[in-house]
Each structure stands twice: as C-alpha cells, then as structure tokens.
Length: 113
Image 1 (cartoon, rainbow, N blue to C red):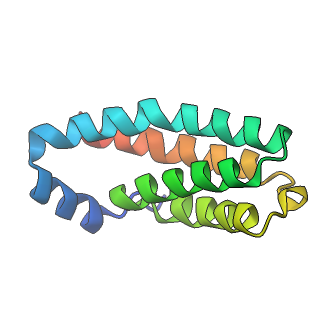
Image 2: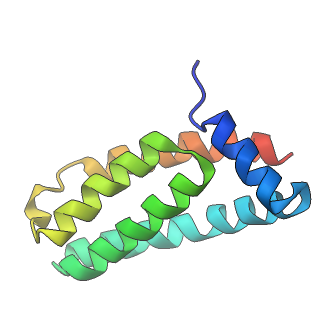
Image 3: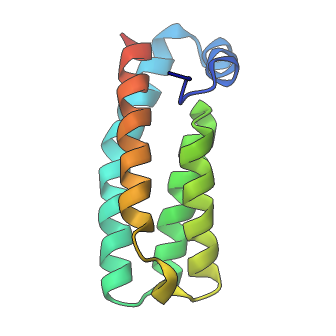
C-alpha cells in the first residue's frame, strides 16, 4: 500500500523541527482535526460558507504540513466550495475527507512512535 504521508515531506519537517517536537506537532494535529470536522459539519448545517471555508483551509494547511497530499487536496476542494458559497455541492465529500483523515492519522501515529 502506498504511503499516505509523503515520506520526504515528513522527513524534511522532522529535520526542521527536531525529532522531539514532531511528536508534539502530530499530537496537536490529531487533537485539532476532529474539532475542525465538527466546525465543518456545524457550518454546513448553518449554511455558513465562510466558517466552512476557514475550517477546510485549516485542515488543508495542517495536512500539507505533514505531506498528507490527498487529505490536503480533498480539504482544498471543500475550501473552494466554501469560498464559492456552494455548500449545496458538498454531497458526500465530508465523509470522503474524514476517511482520508483516518488513514493519514493512522500513518502519522505510526510515524510518531
């Protein structure tokens, strides 16, 4: 199975932050992501495109930091949906995004051990 986390991007981040701090960064990401998903769901239910866009943007940026390319790409799609105020087009994309997050999270947990 191919890596969900780009190993080169992850190693570059680890080299910049140091091996001790990377674990803290992963823990923070794993703590923050469920809150961002809740913000996405709440904003979608309230038809709040700006809040939806901001939560998707945060998730995209955080995923990209670790080299989670697919997760970042999916979050960027949702960010654009929010920016264009087309929340009616979300469909099952949140479910797909959450599945991509779960896969990335499992890989990150293994990398922080």
